[in-house]
Amino acid sequence: MSEKTIPYKIYLEESEMPKAWYNVRADMKNKPAPLLNPATHEPLTAEELSHVFCEELVAQELDNDNAYIDIPEEIRNFYKMYRPSPLVRAYCLEEKLQTPAKIYYKFEGNNTSGSHKLNSAIAQAYYAKKQGLKGVTTETGAGQWGTALSMACSYLDLDCKVYMVKVSYEQKPFRREVMRTYGASVVPSPSDTTEVGRKILAEHPGTGGSLGCAISEAVEVAGRDPSYRYVLGSVLNQVLLHQSVIGLETKIAMDKYGIKPDVIIGCAGGGSNLGGLISPFMGEKLRGEADYQFIAIEPASCPSFTRGTFAYDFCDTGKICPLAKMYTLGSDFMPSPNHAGGLRFHGMSSTLSQLYHDGLMEARSVEQTSVFEAAEQFARVEGILPAPESSHAIRAAIDEALKCKETGEEKTILFGLTGTGYFDMVAYEKFHDGEMSDDIPTDEVIAESIAKLPKI
Image (cartoon, rainbow, N blue to C red; front, side, top):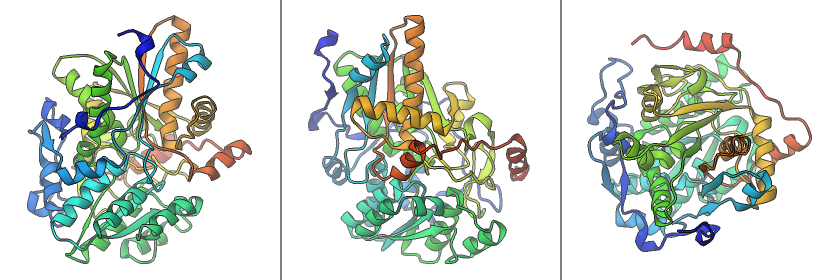
């Protein structure tokens, strides 16, 4: 198919939308290590996990064998409100950069939550409702996940309790108000409403919080009431499964037009967007059917892939959650308050960590001011104001395109645009006013946190 026939935006028909999620673990030779009971250091059983998560989600979390898991019709019908999302050819950016590279991005911001997070939020809320629960608890960093979950819970008449990282709670009041509009209660974390929150405040007075802190509080609150369960917006296997709809749609659209990406780029905090985008392509690589270059982009202020250690660690600062084997900076690591707000988790998805450890993907860290330079450049030529998290991937895509300009290579670059940045104007203001800094942890700070890893 000639290049001229490829439209700016490629949309699938409803009939072409995926009817099953893809589970990349089924094709992995080295499976991700199991979650461990923090008390016994033994693999957690389905029964133990069911005290924290919904039963159907536990089954998905532990499933390493089934490559495809059917998407319930009710979830597929909900998806139709905002899916399929467009695959966009960045013609204007290519022209601006004067690069021979072809650049595509999968845009996940066409819904009220403003991000890809809704893909898993509706799934987790659906299974909670199906189980007859009253509500769910969760944490949120920049606020996209909390917004998405509050929307899904409102749709299904579930109660939703959100613990929002304090620095984001203060920087992003409008994101907080969207959650409240959908009926969620939103508490800045760490808070004095939980035992673990009070403990963290005593140990770190004045802290802006972290996802690890917020997770601890949300899990503690869910544990108080058997009619509630805890849900998580990233990191877990089940979340990567639900987010595979991103990559599946992308691959269907690209195959339809005979497009094969050479480089696939995603921002990485806990792994939901990156894992969702790359999963079906990674499956091809694992099966020996095709080869791709996968690049995870993380913030230099919280560089779990590039400066972390592959080891078992707590998923939360309060050390009450299961132990996961992942690339981690240590559950005590407190990232400096940054203006992006997201991508602040101390660890990385066990699935992605194993793929990275096996050399099947690479990772880079980028500084915040450089990220916002890329965000501004993208907004001016592509007409979308990107979320700061997404802009990490934009930074890398621009860098790869400029390399092609130098070498003359005509690579095809694909990246994930996870959402919009209209609730991130304080961050853009700081950037424009020259008040944004690049806070990078020292080797000593990381080593001190890593030294506290549990001895497994």
